[in-house]
Image (cartoon, rainbow, N blue to C red; front, top):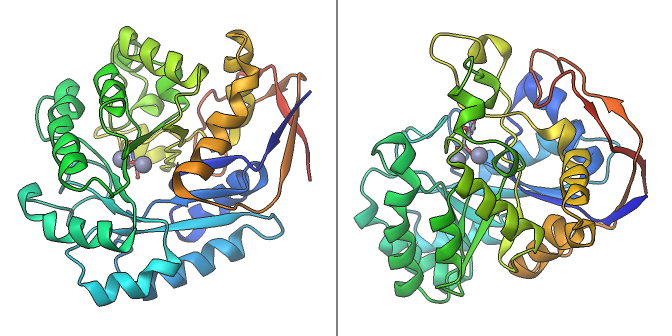
Length: 331
Ligand SMILES: NC(=O)N[C@@H](CC(=O)O)C(=O)O
Ligand SMILES: [Zn+2]
Ligand SMILES: [Zn+2]
């Protein structure tokens, strides 16, 4: 038996409409809260849109106790806009233009964001970043690291979260600047590029940033298992309908929401690190963001269950596989 207090998913895509209705309850059952990504079409870039979206999420998760921690899509907002939004958001999410799903209209010139970063620093609003360049696909995260380093230095009181890191290099950067934090996904602790493209092409494992080399995975896993104090769990669960995944031109995103806590329990158990899971899935995030999540105890037991092949028209990670752990009680 394993009990987790207020697990948090610090990077989550819930979408809108029918998809929201299918996926939101899955996260809301298992987690006390989640950081909700703003890359809708059009993006969540005003307080009005954000409020409407939060209300749609709250309606979709009834009766679960679940706090959506909202983010605004990065724009060159003025001070008044950020001050008004501050009580309603956990941070502002920066996407370089076109680097990932629904990121068009993101930042096209990273040299021109600094006035906004200065405002975020002054107002105490964290900056969350999809940190990839437009370079060669395996080098994109590495090529972005100098921007993180530069901003961390230039804005020492700004909390900068490197979202879904996939490389040993990004992890190393964490130790250089105390105002950097990072999220890591479940799938990047488990798979490498070989799982995506080394055999038959696996569209349901295709995501941005793409899974990297075995040594990157090993470094990420080691940091998660010993729970690096500035590393948080963020699933980046990113559902797409099956016709967008099993297609010429496969959409990027892995849908892990239904399997996260059982698979994390299994992974941490296999590495004799179950005692570290609480810090990784909750305590670190609470400390880094200064969060007080709703109380929620999630109990898992070592009982086998089979992952469904589909949730609506979305194929989950580990579809059809039998997992060793399952959630047995939520209080
Ligand atoms: N990770 C992904 O591959 N896709 C995400 C966007 C993102 O987080 O970059 C999505 O919204 O589908
Ligand atoms: Zn991203
Ligand atoms: Zn994401």
